[in-house]
Image (cartoon, rainbow, N blue to C red; front, side, top):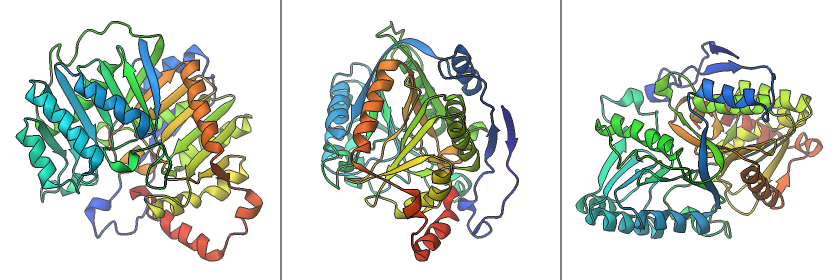
Length: 418
């Protein structure tokens, strides 16, 4: 693999607003040398991301709020010592109140409850709800709030979704604490989402990811067995947690995607809410198709929360389709899941989108599982989503109106910020 900085490009608005100035992305190039089933894949993933592949874990995929919210709330209500949460979105509403009440009850019972919320993603959280959390003894920190002296890092957000209870149970994925994720993707207001519940030694890596931003926000080190207990094996799954941050000087999440795609030999199935690939991942996906890999991508359809992102994503459809990558738009509601399953054994579930913001600007976290049963379950979810999606056909796509092409082109100018 070769690492190098991209050549400096010209960006609209770069001299007007310093907060929209993108970092120069790291360029990653890798040749196909081994498959996902080879030991070399696991060793390379460990070595290049710096995160160990940890055995002895029990992992469970949770589909939609009807499954993951009850599981998360049950874990919180059963906490004995510590609860740590980090979320991009925490909004008022039914589920926001339920979480606040569960956290407050545990804090009153003597459990140490610490919460990091992104100052942009959770900006609409009411003062009433904030006061309720603080009044009940919850330690709340805002990640990179806007101050005159912090404007240079204001565009660096935490997009992580983490819940760790007693240092032994962890949750991650794409969901926020908001009513948009209620239900079972059964209406336009209830989004399609995938989360993962983890028990076992790898939860220590999730706890470390939380501590990373707690130190940045509060300046407090979390230590001792209440946060980092010795954890006996809970299952048979080999797992790894990827923590990515632009402050670390490289994009670990982009490395995750690059190594996985270049190592694929049979299939790459991606579900992603904001699919705006950069040049490196485009080349990797195209190379996979040339090797005979079945590459499919599910993205949101008309029901999306950020229409400009959909337009920027559609800018790449023509190239993707010409290179044999199949694209599907999910129809019933917003497709917000961020998952990938490769060759029926390697799965990643997390917060990272397939775009330059996640690769270059956001703090992200993904949980990777090397297990055929988990991969099979993720493939089952993918197939079910395919049945509710519309495939984009090349011959029809090339005939789309010129005005639509123009909207896609304009949207793509802002892809680094979407």
